[in-house]
View (tube, helix red, strand yellow):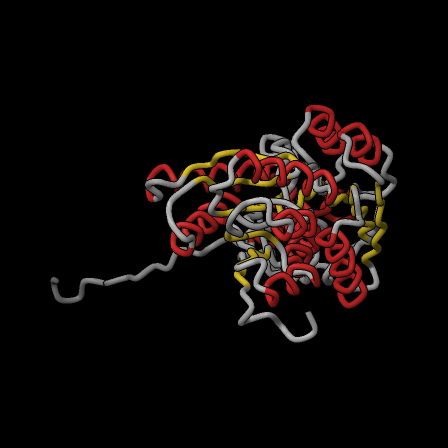
Length: 353
């Protein structure tokens, strides 16, 4: 460098974003941004969320509105709330909402049956601004969910998903992994290779279909000598499940294991204790309830796969809180459920169950 040559280090000034920049990025007018940032009202919730998100992302240097807590009126739609899992789910939602925030309101719609038309009618008639639902995969339910999306009412599916719909998120476990796990344990613990009977509600529920598919996948690659001899659709009814399972034992007396992917575990217990088959089969099922806890202690059931109802309920509520603009929520888009499955045997049943 020649003597006397001036060396200038020029720092390029970074222009701070303005309200006009936020307006341009959000696709709204400056007046709309002003109304949002100064909480003047007369702005739709979707626009308000978008403007705030853009302002935060751009780093607008001004005090943004405090954490916004609109009233979230959640409609929890539960067909057949008499089933132990669904009863437990309702209890968990009540606890979570009561402890979370006064701006959360929970309305539970219970249905005496799970017919698609009944569920779709409940979805379509909701007066809430958010919905959480357990439902089977059926065209009328899919249509109802998409129509709620048209009305800007977010839907979270729980327990059993409806992929391909315009639902906001799914709150639940990986059912295919649960089915593979069940197959692994049966192949590891059964008295020997042989036929297996699967019990389900019916395969119209994504959760049940995926569990069966995962179970079948595992047997195909890692379960030589084991086969699914029959799938009993008991519609989660105790009497129907017992009758159909006893018939299966009569037809397939060499059954080495029963895997119940649904409810009606009491029906399975009754069929096993009828001792129709010459030897009692290994029994794996789902959900830790007072009934399955007793079956585990009594040695009728070997393992139960629980889908963490409280964590499912918490994830569903968190998703809706984040969607409606609450700050400090531990989830963000895309909303991917990582709720774990938990295995229970007679040796690790929590106290009080």
